Image 1 (spheres, rainbow, N blue to C red):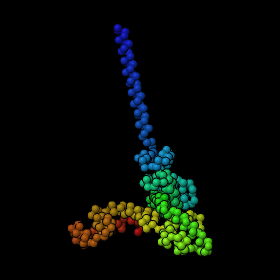
Image 2 (image 1 turned 120 degrees about the horizontal axis):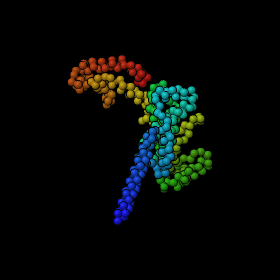
Image 3 (image 1 turned 60 degrees about the vertical axis):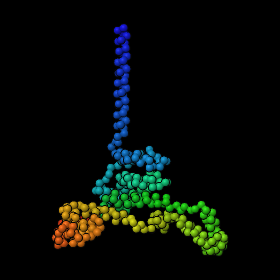
Image 4 (image 1 turned 180 degrees about the vertical axis):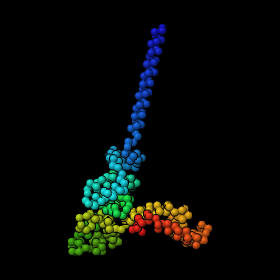
Length: 336
């Protein structure tokens, strides 16, 4: 009986030991999995991507995106001083410097391209990145380091322009009503035949008579054909690829050099104004419309602070004198 009890106890102990080992093994595997999930150095960009998965086209190569992000993360971000050194080398025709500046800013393209995911039914995330990369290269060719602003500030405009242009070109497809397709085909055939017979461009009235339709209908067909002219049509005989869209002025978007200069001016003004007292800063903001774009009179500012207009004028003059004497104000020349 005792022998049987001992054997039974041994079996129980073996089972307990086995379960302990299995539990330990599972815990190790769990820790290893958690460790693998943690980003390695230089892989911060990969953390953002899974959140975008539902926005990316079903046909998108997710593995390819992960690989690309991992690859571009290896290149360190440049300081402003390093950008200037590279820009000077680029001016002398150094292709290696151009490549280095380009590679160091590929992450900037990705961060901008992410904002446009889902804006197009046809352009994938990789397509947006590729378009942005073209804009980045253009920025490198146009960048003037002497202006003092950061390259990323300047490049952002070109990257956005390249991406939005690609999106716009996708949206420029002229949707022709189904019932008009047959008429358009006939219109083109008749117009071409009459041009050969008459030796000139036929009038809409002549086309309408030949097609046996109203002149108004031919006018509409003519408009559709005219609208269908692509804005991507090449313009000029130069080696540089210029398209019709390049010559259409965008009133809402400032030039990259102007936008970058404005941003730099704002940064420098903030640095200078930060050294004024809160009262001086508020008075200048109200007098020159720095906050709301509205310039207030001395009387209006005086009422705000509960003092006379003369007192406001004195504080304003004192604050302006501080700004004039500031060493950083010299750097603002050329931006205002």
